[in-house]
Length: 245
Image 1 (tube, helix red, strand yellow):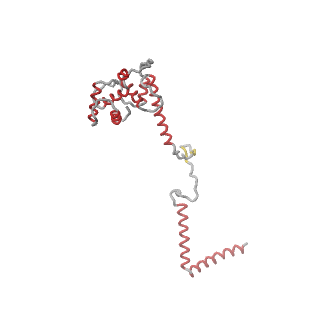
Image 2: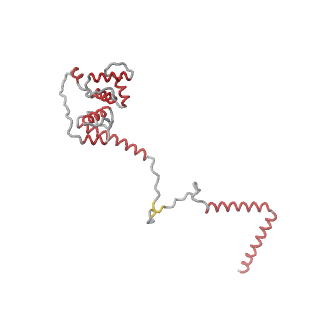
Image 3: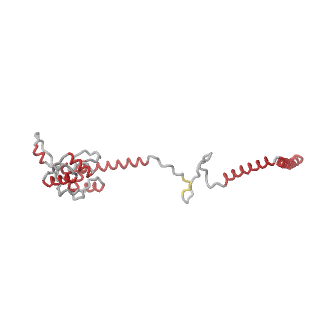
């Protein structure tokens, strides 16, 4: 055993001497080997101890360390990514709530005799006119918009509007139809009054005030002055108010 140990100890100086001798005989190779070894050592040291954080694209992915939750030191999982469908779901929920609100407004207005259309949640000319009729009948500002405040006002309104039940009449009286109030004419009168074409009472009855207001509107819009309700008049008023008549 002592001989083996001594032989090993003697071999180390011989090896070092051989390396030094080779370096002396080939100084270029020795310098290149030294530079390569120094570069490899620098890369290893920089990768293991000198980086401020994990590499953005490591060759081997590592699981991130758990995060301590609060002062108790319990480990909490990292929050996962939010699903991409969250925005779409929120949009659908907003659309459904709007339709539900319109349906509730239509139902309450129908129970009070202001609305005679389908309770389908679709906002159209009949719903707009019914809302405005209710607002006018209850002294509210005319908006025509279905809102939660309007729904609450409808539900808290006293009593119900008396609905006239028409008697069956096999014959149609054209004169009576002309004299009967028109919902479209009511909407036209309200639009003309709101936009300053005259102090017109929206009662659905055609009179001198309505004719004069229509004539002012026609002159203002460079239309033929007739003073009568026409398809073009309805289109122009709808474009100006931004709502169907």
